[in-house]
Amino acid sequence: MTSLTKLPEYQSLREHQQSLAGTHLRELFAQDAERGQRFALEAVGIYLDYSKNLITQQTLDLLIGLARATGLEQRIGAMFRGDKINATEGRAVLHTALRAPRDAVVQLDGANVVPDVHAVLDRMSGFCAQVRSGQWKGHTGKPIRTIVNVGIGGSDLGPLMAFEALKHYSQRNLSLRFVSNVDPTDFAEAVQGLNAEETLFVVCSKTFTTLETLANARLARAWCVEALGSEAAVGRHFVAVSTNAEKVAEFGIDTQNMFGFWDWVGGRYSYDSAIGLSLMLAIGPERFSEMLGGFRAMDEHFRTAPLDENLPVLLGLIGVWYNNFWGAESHAVLPYDQYLKRFSAYLQQLDMESNGKQVTLSGERCDYQTGPIIWGEPGTNGQHAFYQLIHQGTKLIPCDFLAFANSLNPRGNQHDLLMANFFAQTEALAFGKTEAQVRADGVPEALVLHKVFQGNRPTNTILFDRLTPAALGKLVALYEHKVFVQGVIWNVNSFDQWGVELGKVLAQRIIPELEDPKAVLAHDSSTNELIRRYRALKS
Ligand code: F6P
Image 1 (cartoon, rainbow, N blue to C red):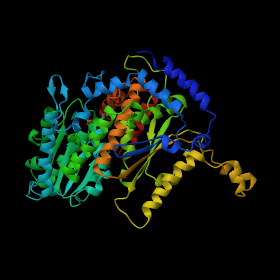
Image 2: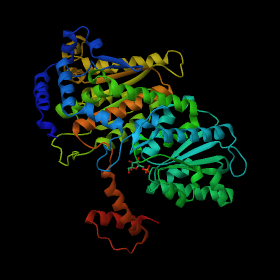
Image 3: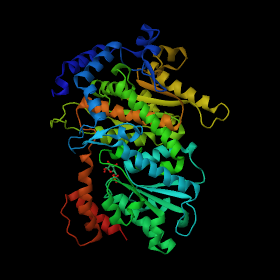
Image 4: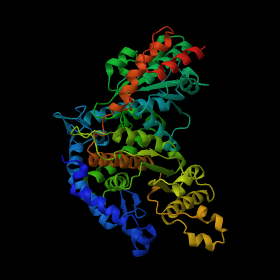
């Protein structure tokens, strides 16, 4: 494939950016009284307003042209068809099959994977029904009251984000805790005050070789066995979620108590597989199934809608526009819903582990920017922390603003207060406040420039009716597919993560050097000195 930057469509976008660089959103809105309706799209229950972007119809046409030139339509087909598009690992990418209906057919290497997906979902449902009803008893005969999810990366962030997002729907007499960090403090605090008799550990690891998860699972096992006085307790207090039955058995968890998934599901695309077991325990199989329905609706939309009426495609292309033509380094995701407090953290892995690459699928080094830095916090908290920089700083930070029209916890007019802030922020970012307006307010001359808001700061607004399990499924699939679209444009493999390996290997080398104070150190002078100091300080 021709390098992205050599494509005529890419060159045209560069020229177009130069012609648009001096235009303000104020002018674009003034020129077209219907811009707010024209650059908006409603599909699968989501309203996307993308009018407050530095775009014209020509921009969109050129971006769609770029998408076509990079083969986006064919790549979408290839992913859904189960082609081995994760080329560096020789795997298919079929997280969309995790939410396929029972009667669907998704062939991989000559076999339909959908019956396997539903067999696991059925086992999960059965197990969850037992635990939720108290029928599943711990070693001493007591029902389970707390579930501790042990995992990291996709085996933690997905279930954690979704549990927080759907807490409203959770069974409140079951509590859910998460342990991910190898820092023993994480484990110590997670089991603080728990009664081992009523605690169930869900050990989640796709590979079942991850250092952090295995270390925490060992701590959990020792804690449980010590409290309950018997190795036999493990069978009633531990279940595993993994693709690696051998390692699960080696660890000492009966594979009868294991829920499987497959190598064609990436860790960061996995919380709608068995990796979502702790979530299903919390919200129940029916709500989980509604969530899968939401994912499926977005999958269908992505697969079938024309590019210019396709939510993930539009979000992806608008992101490429700022990343590659306006020099934006980061992208903020700002949910105006407290239940989505971990959504940006979840997206960081989804997006940055997927598209933080610099070698193309054809094996060449990229001569253009790829994945942006993703960050964000829920509104309105962010407004009182970092929005200053978005409004008046020197950096261009495109933002996605997300909100729900109906609160799950209505109290007086507080949801209106939240939403007033939500609408006000994108308005302020787009239109700002001119010097003339500031002077008209009677501001002393010395303060005028300080009080000017240049505006012209781009945002997308994504509005839903209400945060339901289905809405969450749609939202997550929206971003999964947005990341895919961008990966296609940048011609990178969004489904491997070689960049996490080197640190893991070096840590393995350092572990024995910390345990044996006499071990010879042969690192660089900085690392050697830091290790020496650590050894000296450690009591
Ligand atoms: O090291 C990164 C990573 O491989 C992620 O991609 C993954 O989500 C995480 O580690 C956990 O991996 P596992 O589920 O195999 O323990």
